Length: 69
Image (cartoon, rainbow, N blue to C red):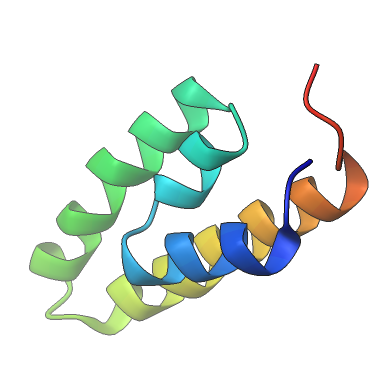
């Protein structure tokens, strides 16, 4: 079973880890690569936005698909 809170928290700490926890390998790798670029490229502004979006998508995926296939 996927726990939405755990997925969201993991992805909030390190964007992409929550997606990896959910089994979405490609999405997790993309978040892990894209977010640091936004942190560096925008001086942190878009980095926070990526953190929040990453956490929300991990949470919502775990909530919508709680059972691992």
